[in-house]
Image 1: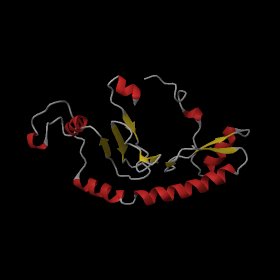
Image 2 (image 1 turned 120 degrees about the vertical axis):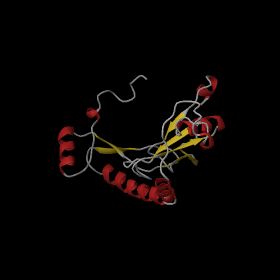
Image 3 (image 1 turned 180 degrees about the vertical axis):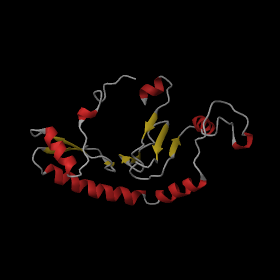
Image 4 (image 1 turned 30 degrees about the vertical axis):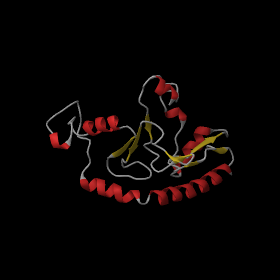
Length: 184
């Protein structure tokens, strides 16, 4: 944030998979200017066919975002006055009601995922050649995709065996470029 403040830049925190999670007692999505969450059907905590949430700590940015999701209109009262480009980024009242009702269950969902995730971590760490990749953060996780490494021989054979038994796994070899080396 220091670099962003020095350069008068806006920082967006992508927390698409981390709704309800925390770092050092503070909710993810609240560390920077804008926090974004996704509620698509493949998300882990709260899901729906589509939709998302934006958390903003700046009234100017909030006004801009409201305009963006409302076809660029200045306000709902002046719907044909467009101050910038925009989209129809609103979800229906029904979708909003379904998502809102799910928010009451977030803590319970995360606790259940944490309990199951810890069982999984302990189980995998006991297998020959496997070790879990964990963080030592003081945080609330949601174990969306627990990461493990296999250090044994015949890695591709092991991956095929796991896939055969219905265990979804991925290999770094599936990425077309090294992670964290792409320049934007």
